[in-house]
Every structure is written in C-alpha cells, then in structure tokens.
Length: 401
Image 1: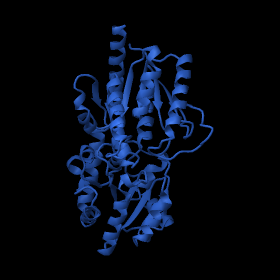
Image 2: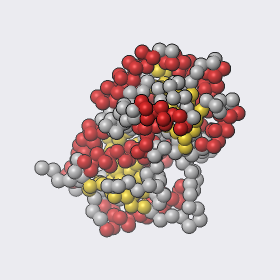
Image 3: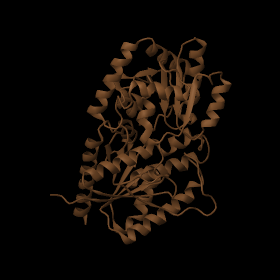
Image 4: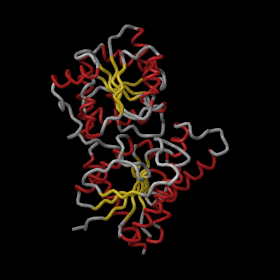
C-alpha cells in the first residue's frame, strides 16, 4: 500500500477568504486529507483559520497591514515574506512535493524548493497577465506588459506539472507542447454542502422578508466578488432595463469588497429599490444565501479565469444566466442560458426575463444542472486524480535521482 504523501501547499493570498481561489484551495486540501494525506498550507498573514487544516502564516509587513483583493504592487513585498516562511518550513520539515497555487506560489515553490529537489505542481487558475489586465493593473499596450508576459511564460516552463482549473486553461497552454505536463483539473463543488432544500419554504420567506425582499416574488441571486471584471456594473444595468420594462424581479447580491460603491451605483441607476446587497457572506452560509434565489447569474467578463461560483449554482439546482464565454460553457454545457455578446446589459436582461416567463424551463434547467454537477464536478473524483498526478511526479523524480 502506498504511504501517505506529505504535501506543502503555497497559497499567495489571505487564505481563507470567502471567494474564488480560496474555495479551490480549501476543497483540495480537505479532499486530500480525507484520502489520508498530510497537507500543510503556507499563506499570507491575514485570513481566517479553518478547523482541521494546518495553516502557517508569514509575518506582516511593518509598513502596511492591509491589502486589497486582486492585483497590487505592494503584494510583491508580501510574496517575499511568504517565500521566507516557506524556506523556514522546509528547513524544519520534510515533504514529498510542493503544490503552488497561482503564479506566485509556483514561482516561490520552484525557487525556494530547489535545494531539496522537490517536484512542484503548479495549480493555475488563470493567466497572470490576463488577470492583471482584467483588474486594470496592467495596460496591455503599456511598456510593462511584455515583461510580465515573459515572466508568466517562464513560470509556466518551470513547473513540473501544471493543473488547470478549466479545460480552457489547458488549451491556452497548448503552445508549451511536450515541455511541461499539463493536466486539466477543473473546479468542482461539494454537492453535499451545496444542495437544494437547505432551507424550508417558511425559512426562505422569513429570510427574504428580513432582507426587504418580496416573500414570493422572483429573486435573481449573485454570490462572489464585487468588482467590475465580475460584471457587476452590467448586472446593475440589466436590473435597470428590467425595471424599465416593468418586469417584477428583485436582485440579491452577496459579496465584497466594494459593497458601498455598487450600492451607490444601483441608486444612481434608479434600481436601489430592486437590489439588496448583503456584504460578505461566510462560505458556511453560502448555500442558505443561494437558496433565497430563483435564478442565479454569473456575469463574469474575464476570458481567462475560472468561475467556480457557477458550480455552486449548479449544485443548488439554480437555473443560471451567464455571459457567453468558453469557461461558462465548460461548466454549464447545453443547460446554461447565455447572454451574447458578453458585456451587454440588454442581452443579460433578455435572458433573465426569458427565464422569469418560463417557470417550467427554470425547474428543468435547475434539475439538469444539479445532475451535471454530480456527474462531472465531484471533488472526490478530482482528489483521486490529483493524488495520481502527485504519485506519478514523485516516482519520476525519484527515478531521475
């Protein structure tokens, strides 16, 4: 019987926060532990500890104790502190491999882990330059774009194995040919946690009323980061289109960090009475939040990043409207309702209205999406695939020695 593996995960983010890449890190660590392996997560000094996970944090920077979500220049300093913490851990502990999340995690793992000759799995959740452009941190026509792109390509080539959070991510790396092993490992969902029926009808009515939502009227729900690249402005503009058409629908938007900014935007668009912002929703409360909706919406605009929130919607049996992007189609398949062209508030409003007018279609799509999530996006299956990748890589490294 193969012995348990000792895995050092590097998470260059404030793990755990209640969104996106953090959920992938969390669920991967949990499934690996369920399969009997040892996982140690080294991360930034901010974030929320999760019971049952070993989380080691780097020291804070003395000149700035906070930082925003997304790309930012001062995160370079945090990555230096993170690399130092990884070095210290490797001096005192033994591991079989390094699992580096995001580009910074892969780079730190490869450079710092070199003296121990540890193989590195790069968990790629999107393009480095693509994310920076989406976040308006990098100008695609500016002088720095070329250098950041070269760094991205170099990190891609340094990894022993790249696992991608979408099939589309693997396609984007096709230019590497046989130089690096690429294994698609799409985002998955805990379908026992995200499931229909987490709230009774009476609980849904009471929670809606407490939020100022109609107890029985249709509600469109969103849960994720609040940012322009997530399509929040387009979502609010679609709410205005539907109000102008006198379509009776409300919107429940959960997430952070720019809640007040988008609340003011909703007011300026004249839909403040139609949109409720809840602020940050703890991951543990996510199913209950989503249970308040009749339709889910995923208006993300990025063409390179994953969109794990869609999988949560699917597991909750929520019919889902998304912009027509390759990643959205990868998750939803033929059961998605796609707004095209991407970025069009009118197209988004058209799709929402079409679902509102067809309750039978909503139920059929929701049930189909739940079954699709169960068949194709299970963390247990993904965990076994990940362990197989680990063992192949470790065996190859030992053979080379």
